[in-house]
Image (cartoon, one colour):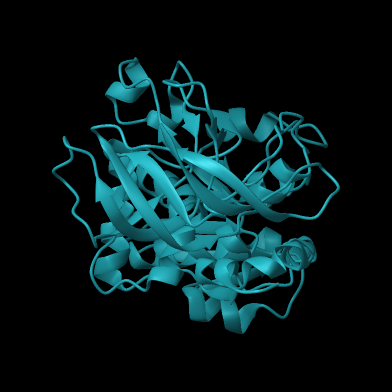
Length: 353
């Protein structure tokens, strides 16, 4: 059985998003029904909508930075009650029995995680649709509790941008005394600065152009290095234990490798694809350095991240928009014209265009 829901959907790679009526499943015994209040706009929404990765299925309702309140729960649900503030991130299911799932790494599920949108439910075969909608139904195992006092709109991007940067910081054991650098000051980069600073690290922003120093320092950076300035880059050689590279487009990572300390790691978070130009392995071998990747986080780690943000008063810097302005927001994102994340106020769905 199903029930009707309204949302905004893409119907082709080139068309505008628009109103779309579709059905959500009736709740299973372990399901939570959530009224969506806010949904963050991720750069991957644009990639998916425009079929940049070649796997788009239309109609597509994007959105995987979802914050709302519990409307109803299934008979077996005990962790949530009606009215609770909750979140849903990039995944809504996994096989739950492979080695990765057993470690709490559902995002690396060996049988494939179920994405919040542009995917297929592993139980009923129906397409998954995301948070650009008024309501969603998700298994309680993949629903997250929002700490009291956390701004609900500012919390939405934590479900993707927040956990994408928090997970590698935790995995590489960042804490007081760590020297961390962040490449790129956008949706991911600004969260990386906030989180690394809150963990007690000494934090540096790599930027290709001047003019971002005041904002970077406000967000938690101790230092700013202009990566196009050879003298500044030479001055930070062998300094960083961890570099988080948040740039979502093709770029040369070779200039950053010499700034790693011996045993240091550069982690790619924003770009998926071949490195161009090719990565020079000589510094890696000579300094036991590494270039690695990281993808969001598991459910337990995402809950840990939300609790950490609650304790430290961390939320994303956002601009709230109406759903009717989503296409314009996409164009602005492509021009980097947002500080630092758009969040849709889903109450606008009931307003005239």
